[in-house]
Image (cartoon, rainbow, N blue to C red; front, side, top):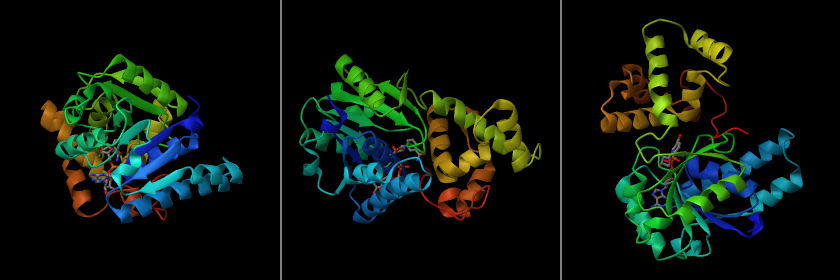
Length: 292
Ligand SMILES: NC(=O)c1ccc[n+]([C@@H]2O[C@H](COP(=O)([O-])OP(=O)(O)OC[C@H]3O[C@@H](n4cnc5c(N)ncnc54)[C@H](O)[C@@H]3O)[C@@H](O)[C@H]2O)c1
């Protein structure tokens, strides 16, 4: 199917839904961005438009292409409007009961062969799929933040995911220009299994005085070849998100390496969440959701 002919619904116009909608529109799919909050939806549409405008400013995209991409995105607040979707990507709050309910409601709206993707970070894909009467078409697709810039998506099948849904999902991700890797439906998938304990150990190194913010970030970029150091990365991800993901993984895995060090709680309670609040490990003038 040609990209232009696909209709893709993205549920949740927060950090991830907005980034994913940008990726989908950039890949020339018709994009329906859905949120229960009109204010969040308006903010999300602004963020998508802002991304494309900034891409033009940076010389990465022509003005005509940017306008065409923006025109492919429609904001909706009625679930019934998602009926034409060939693919639905769920990026609502990380809450199992909510996600199950959303998947159950989608069954009444979209066609039986419509793919249902969940962007969960820490919940079981099988558990979320149990909210649908057709769990064979539910697949975990875990995008990295910021979605427009990060190439990797992890693909996790639930217990009842059908082969056709898995294959169609990987083909769809390729149409977005993403590299997909397959992982088991286990807490943290691959990336967060490695990332969270590593970030925690960097925070502990800072807290115990092994190095400074700058020396640790410089050591990691200079010697390990990472594009950004752990503190720059934590500021992009958000300290609140790190805390939430780390705590949820600790609760499931009972491995102390996942438990967030005390500095995380202090920063979160002070509102120093990173880029989105203008201050985290670093300070920022620009608090947009994602860069370009
Ligand atoms: N933030 C990250 O770094 C990151 C990375 C990968 C995956 N995820 C996952 O992506 C999902 C979304 O995370 P986020 O950080 O974008 O959250 P967010 O809080 O920024 O946005 C969530 C959005 O969902 C909306 N929402 C709530 N209930 C809804 C419903 N019933 N229908 C439609 N929209 C609804 C909210 O109004 C909000 O706009 C979570 O499952 C999270 O674990 C997050």
